[in-house]
Picture 1 (spheres, rainbow, N blue to C red):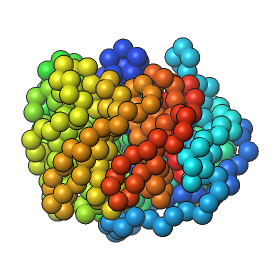
Picture 2 (picture 1 turned 45 degrees about the vertical axis):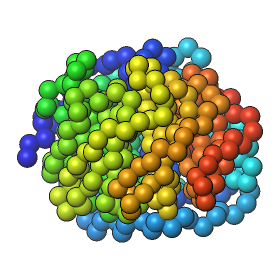
Picture 3 (picture 1 turned 30 degrees about the vertical axis):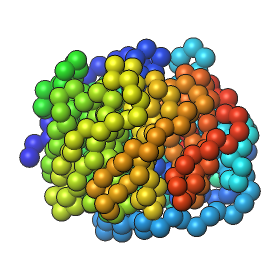
Length: 418
């Protein structure tokens, strides 16, 4: 099945300002395994990237356990905060902080400068390298070594406005989504964590844009739990594209595509740990859907739209990101506009979501949410209030309890606890 032209496409848009104007914004990936505990001193020295050629073939990662991870040792843990550096009141780079894994209290420790508009962050599975999008017209992705916070260099994504990225479970490929161009880029990851030259760029040239959209808008790229497929969520075409990634060449081949109802505006997808179901947050029509997933062919079957708990139905709420606990028992959805986090019970081995209620996020416009590595805390980056809220997660009931006063951080659009 064809996957569209392999070229940079489209121009820059107002995507990165939409949190202020209309509410369409980027999401972030689930937190990866924790890196070494002690945060290094702040400060960076930009440098040229290490060479990284196409990596050797590796088998797909095994499906993660549905069991909650063991608790991390007590003591301060690193927290990185994404922002926009080119908007009024924005940050100066990646915000650096630590958090107390018991109380959830956040303490700022500085800023990592030298990365432009780092609106989304992800960490390598080995915990040694941080990756950030540079969400600009000439989009790029940047690698940062965490031990000394040295910038290992940036690589062009071949498109405009990259808003999401993830590391393949093998640790050998970085995948990024160009929102303004509606394309997905692939970069090899070298042994040092530095990025090599782009190996592929696939633009979503079909189907035609949905109602109110002028073109494709790749909003997220994520791998299936077994690493067998790469899925790209496109808000502009109301489609989720499934690709196979060649582990030798870093090339993408389309395997399947799934259409939402017209005008849904799919934004963010997350998998149940069992691997048979996934949950899709639809930004434009303010809904969430349960999707069945065929692991063999990579095909999603999208279910009926469900409530986000906003109760508005007037286009004033924009779901941002949905997460699932590692034991598969509960799901959480960030609601921008309603400024809440919806809580769902996950039933029938992942096949059903049941809305339990919402809790105020204690901020404005929660653009992204993330669990701490042990799953006991949930972080919410609130774009318009410039704060990060932290909640204790009750493992038995899934209830959220605010952990003190939110932490102030300029135009907070991503919080990545490690």
